[in-house]
Structure formats: structure tokens, C-alpha cells
Image 1 (cartoon, rainbow, N blue to C red):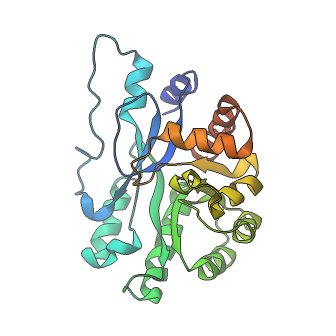
Image 2: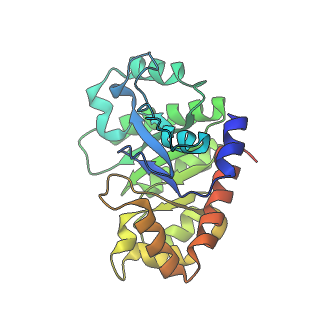
Length: 249
């Protein structure tokens, strides 16, 4: 992956840290996949890039993308968890697997929180074992989330995706070493996410599209306007974070 990474880093692009829809355009995506979607075969986990005579090698790298893999709390009941963990483990050495997740805790679903905590804890340990950062989903369970982080003390980065909370919650998460990823909420004028973005340090920031219709360049434009910085500067900051968290530079 190191050789591909150097090629990627020489190419001006935007980074979509978490998405559910593949888009073959000139930016880098981490496509989120759930264990129940996959078998133990790597074929089909990522869409195959379509080459054309106008595409450079860098274009093909970017269009191929990367992925994360985990057990989302919404899908716990859709699968046998032992089988799901076997599936995840079988992909741990895939060259394009960058993270575990999305995974986490959600108090707005029927699955018992104790069961969610058990499944999430196993994924934390898996991420620690294989040295992978985590893409974290959390809804109304931040107290439990931070208790787990304090108790388990993982060294791998946790990226709270789709953050929409108030600045005090952002400050608490940042204090515990989390990264924050912002998405479509930034497009809403005066949103809590916009205020939290202003207080998020450069070195803890990511941007994403998640399942939104908005393109990643639209998210970058909104974030740059809110932070009152040039998009190129914001792009470099997020690229630096990506290298540090996912490529261990």
C-alpha cells in the first residue's frame, strides 16, 4: 500500500472519510461496508475502476478507493455475529481495508444496549489487534462510549462520523482523543455541527458525505466558509490527518 499511497499523495484530491455510495470521480473515498453484505471472498468488495485512455495511473488509484468493514449496530440482528467476526477477520490483511466500522452504539434502536456494547467491544479489540483506526457511529450513547474508551484505553484512533452535536460534546470527545468527522449538517446554516466545527482543532478534523446526496466538494466548500479558510488549506489539513491516522506517517 505504501507505493500506492505515495502516488495518491502526489495527486490533488479531496478525501471523503466515510461514504456508503461509490462515486468514480477524482477524489478518494473510504466506502463503508457491513459484514452482513459480504462473504469470505474479496471479489466485489469494491467496484472495479473503469479505465479509459484519458485516465492516468493516479486516476485509477483514486477511483479504486478504499473501504472500512465492521458490524453496524443497526445490522446486529441481521447476522450471526460469530460468522460476522470471521468475515471481518478474513479481510484484515486486504490492502485496501483502512478501518474497522462503522460500528458503535445507538440508543434509538431495539437491539439491547448491552448486546451492542459487547459487539462494539469485540470490534475495538480487533482494531487494536490489527492496528486499524475505527469509524464510530454513536447516537445518544456518548457517556457509554467514553466509558468504554477510558476502560479499554485503545491506542487506535476513533473517528466519530457524522458529528452533529453541540460544542461542549465535541470538546468532551476531543479531550478523550477522538477525531470528529462532519458531513451534511454543515450545509444547514447555524447548525450545532457548524458551531462545533469552529472549535475542532485542525489535527482532529475529517469530512464525509455518509449517505447524503451532497458531493464531497460541497461539504469542503461549506466547511472552508465556516472556518474562514481557503479550501486548499483545509484540504491539506485533512490530508495530513489522513496520512497520520490511516497511513501512520
